[in-house]
Length: 263
Ligand code: PGA
Image 1 (cartoon, rainbow, N blue to C red):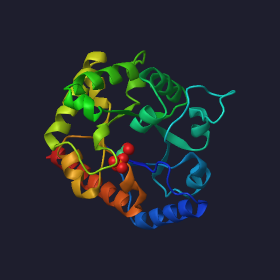
Image 2: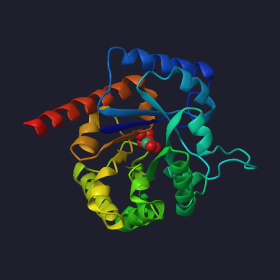
Image 3: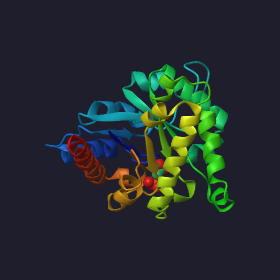
Image 4: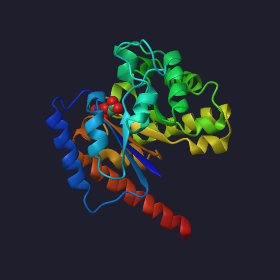
């Protein structure tokens, strides 16, 4: 199974923009179905109602963030429980924009992951190093710290519900990406950390996605050849055509893998 997550961020300003986006998405999906790809669209919260009604069949709804309490006096916040009741199956947590603009800490993100799990939402848990950390050769330390914190106190069963998105912060919102080998190395590192935290079997069940300047033309280099289980897409997810194209690329890849396994 591959995962394709579209993070629409704070875009699509008018209700009609959202409707337009979703109807183009539905048109692009006509006659196609993803059997080996879980495609998830994460619209701004204010568009959730429209999205939950209009999302094409087989495409899942995700939140871009959630708070760690279930309900109460938390002005401006939304709980995982609310997202769930409005039709979400997934929620992005710990995105680097949340960490840098809204001061989210590892501790807050851990609580959010915990709360999401309690509301039966799957967390898409983002981890990634800054440019400075990378230059100081601290990437592995940072990733390990984030993962250990995010998974703290979880059982194996709870851990298996989480999807990790490795998103180097310096690769988001521009056109620089790590090499295939560099991403593959991160894949290995993340698996090693998860194996130590749980066991190798559990580690294998936790999908690891790549995020940061993903588009169809480089999907092979940053995801498929790098052994990743999918992609978290920002800007390019604003094009339903690109999303469906990447979904199809994943689908073809997965079908080939299955056939090869049979032989
Ligand atoms: P980008 O964003 O694809 O625009 O680089 C990725 C992300 O923020 O998840």
